[in-house]
Length: 188
Image 1: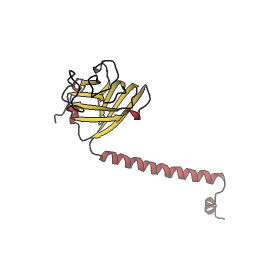
Image 2: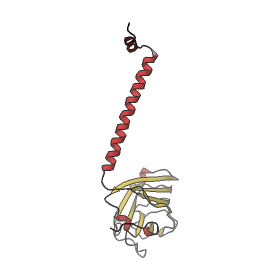
Image 3: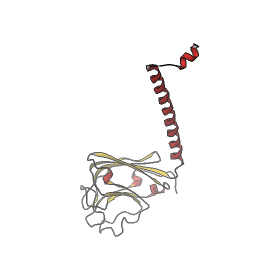
Image 4: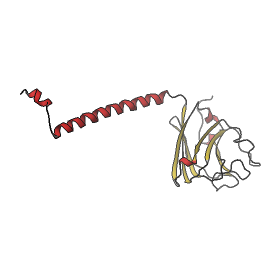
């Protein structure tokens, strides 16, 4: 028998190993192509990618809202509007992050970076289940804007309680001046 023909008639464990190696190589090639395709699709998504990271000690089941605003909260009275005047709003559900003493990370897309020109960043919770974060980080399109900034003291009814009850007179929230940590290089 011709040696070339004999090579194609492999039998036994060698055949299985060869077949598995070929299948693995084909799967790796397909996965590489899918990763490349997903990277292309991500680059084509319009807008700005905004990522928030919090370290929380006590979780909540309420919706947490991050607001960028040019007006500070008037602490003499309960907020009249749902969130007051704001330029941009980002939110997440505390139900998605139920573990105490853990990291909360989420991303959103927005149209542009103009919210970074706001004077204030504010974190509120309209619900009554207090949320206790210790610090906040903010990244916009890969650029770190806030890096583990302490979320103490709180504002409102108590400087040490968890964030809760936004639309009531005894609200507790966190607010700081954004320009203390970030100076926009481009004027919009």
